[in-house]
Length: 386
Image (tube, rainbow, N blue to C red; front, side):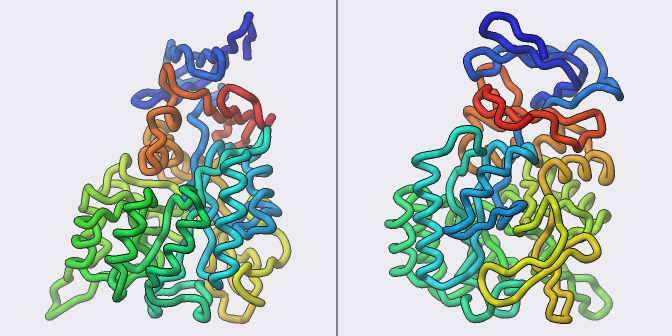
């Protein structure tokens, strides 16, 4: 880094919106004042990227998406290169979900210095289809309730950013309309919706699908002929963003490549779907929605009840970027879209963050030449992790 007057220059392999190469980023008054690429990328140089944005994570290190621990997520997120995120709470009681929404609302309105910024809350549930509930606690999933949604929205005061529901449930259309009217993005997840229902979801304003390949039905064969699945349909529907967990377990490597090549790298939102303990997955942790517990095993978090059921990832966004580039073979530019730019577009904040462009906020993560170790995280030009 080079300091001169009120400006800072960071040298390394710069991953800009549409190209990558060795050069520098200049920062003045919290904004990117210049992006210069001078040559091809150098193998021994740091990597300068747009700060990561995660729209779907349930926990990180000691933090969790609960009213009591969500502030810890904001405190610890800079160490993984996250500059902005949406903490996601799984289906729970009405009271606990309200408490979580209230806690997030207060953090959004009064953020703490040196923390990552919370864009708003993400409710993954409680309106989920039973068969496709995945790791959701069966006691807390329920049918769409317009009165309950009204309570959520009132409590959030504009900070309920995303709600994931099963669109095929009775009453879902009314709930979706109310959420959209109040500026909340709606994602389809834990769903058994048909191809036709998926198209309808996009037509009425649905904007994304939740963790592709996870809790989704596969293709069926009729009379020896493979039939298209709903997952195929949403991958081809340009109206929808597609969440993907790039840990190599939730979505096997061949499927990662299939998903990205089908939908296109600019529609994929790289998420962690991480739980408390992510970043240091040792020991046993309690599920936030019940008395169940989970532990790290075979690359993911699994229940300790003997079922070994997957309940979430231990992925962090710096590792997601590493996996996308070094394991799955995407270019640094494509991987930056999937770990930052597309999320910013999805959240409607791409006019000021999510890319290394002149005039945008200096939200930057600098990785070591291994493309994984976080060396610095900057938010609005201020170093929040080093």
